[in-house]
Image 1 (tube, rainbow, N blue to C red):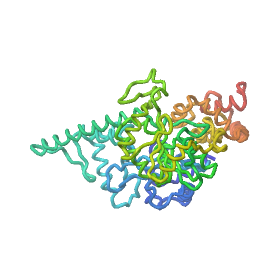
Image 2: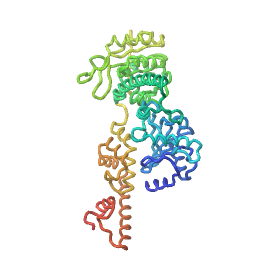
Image 3: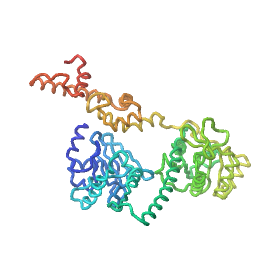
Image 4: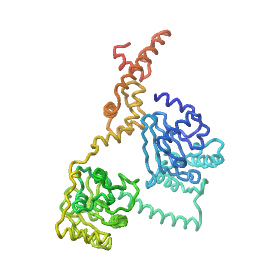
Length: 507
C-alpha cells in the first residue's frame, strides 16, 4: 500500500526536496498529474480546508501524510514565517492541526523559488537572492537556519540586511554609527524580551490541570447555593481538561469551557455565571492575574466565582521560591493565597465587594438583586442539595487512553512500514525522523511495535508477512535460472527476510 502511494510521487514535477518530503506552492499544483491533484483534494476534504487556508503542500514519500501549510506573506517576505499546519493522514483519515502563530521563534522558509512553477514571474528574483546568500556561505548550518531567531542572528553576524529581496550591506560613517546604536538598543530590548519569554517557558501552566472524578470545589459551591440551574448559562474560564464542563453538560446545564492550552479555540462569550477555578494561583505574573480576573468579570452577567489554593493546602518542601510563590519539580508555578489577601485582591481589581463562601472561594456579584437574594438565603442557612448526578465519578477517558491517542499518528506510520515489509523492522529500516520521534516519545522501537500490535489488527500484519514470503519464493526461484545467489551477497533487508520467513538454516 505504501509502495503504491510512494510511486505516485515519482510523477511530481518540481518542488523543493527536503529529505523525504517534497514542498510545492499551490500555484505549482496546476502542473501536476491528475493523481497528485486528487490526493490534495482528498486531503482538503478530510481537513475541511477552504480556499486561502494554506499556500504550500508537503508530500511525504515514507508515509500517507499530506501537509497543508500556511506561510504568511509568501510573496512579500524573503523568508516567510510558518503560521499554521494541517497534516492529513490519508490512510487513517486523521487530521492533526498545529498553530505556530504565537511562537516566539517560528519556522521560516528558504529557497522559496523552488516551490514555484519555472515560468513564475518572481522566481528569478527569489533565485538571485538565494544564489547570493549561498555565495556568502549563509546556508552552512541547514539544521538551524530554519528558525527565525538563528537566521536573523546569522545575517547580523555577517553585517547583512535583507530589504525586499535584495541584500543591503552595512552602512558607513554617521549613518552606520546611528544604525549601530539603534541596533544595540533594539538588541538590548530583544534580549530583555527573550529573557522574559525564557522565564515563561520555564513554567508550564497547563501541567497544573488535574483530572477530576467529581465536581471541583467552586462548582460545588455554586451548586449548593442554587446558582447552577438550567436557565442560567455557565462559562468555565480556565477549564483545564474539561471534567467540570462534561459533568454539568450531562445534567442539562448550558455550559462552555475555555482554556488557553486545552480549549483555546472555544469562542469566549458572556455567561450568567463564570467560574475562575484555580487559575489565578498558577499565574506567576501579578499583572496577568489582574487581567485574567477582570476579563472573566467582563464576561459575567450575574455572578463570578473565584477559587485559589490557600496557604497550608499545599506541600512546598522541595519547591523553589519564585516571586510570590513556588516552582515545582514539574516546572509548574503555585501561589498560595491567604483568605484576606484574596478578598483584598478581588475587591481592588474588580471595584466591588467579594463575598467569601469557603476557604479560597469567593463570589463576586454583578447582578445586585441576585446578590441580595444570595445573602438572605445564606442568612436563613438555605442550601440547595448537590444534584445526585454530579456526585458519582465522571465518565472520562483514562490517562492511558489519552496517551495512546497522542501516540496514534506515530504508531500508524510505523505500522504502515511494517505492513510494507510484512514483519517487524530494525532501526536501520525506519526513516530517521520517525525513529527519532519514536525514541523520544516511547523509548524504543520494540516498545512502539508492541503498542502498534495492541492498537491495530495483527492479522493484517500476518497476511502481509505471508505475501512477502511468497514474493521472496518467486524471487529466489527465478534466480535459480541464472545460478544460486550466494547468501553473503544479498542485501541486508533480504538477509533479514530469509532469517524471519525461512529460518537460519536456509543456505
